[in-house]
Amino acid sequence: MEQTKIILVATDFSEHSKHAWEYALHEAQIHKAGLVVAHVIHRMVREDHMLMDTMSTMRVSEALRNIAEDQFQSMKKAAALVDVACKTFILEGTPFVEIIKCARETEADMAVVGSHGTAGLASMMLGSTAEKVVRKAPCSVVVVKQKGWVFKMP
Image 1 (cartoon, one colour):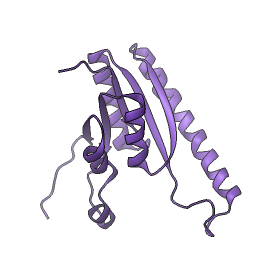
Image 2 (tube, rainbow, N blue to C red):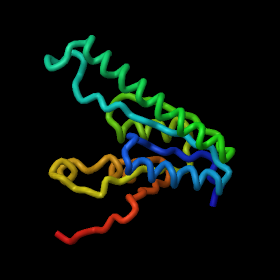
Image 3 (cartoon, rainbow, N blue to C red):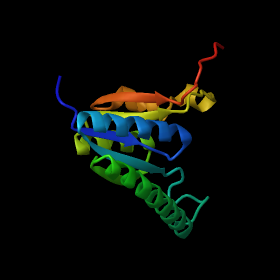
């Protein structure tokens, strides 16, 4: 088995992602690996769509980038405290596509994603981001469930 050198962790800064971050940081310490943290701003409306003009889209995107940068600062500090190198990326597009691209481009040996543990109609029809990353990523993927999560039979 090859040594784990780069661990990609995808985050949307939710509580579920926090658990994935903690897991990835711990694994990076154990393997003496670097961390790549990716946040994807999901472009749900194309800029030329009638629902949102270009200026509104740009303002929303800029605000989301600023929020992500703020979140990344505390993550970088936590990584530095345990002597783990940490790079951050803010990506725009479809989350699973951008996460997979980032895994390829950074040559990640492992990806870590959080799971919401819920399955709404959209998830049943389209599949969750975590499921798509598991199926299509070029590396091993660990899906971290929130502590205390219990499957309930339908």
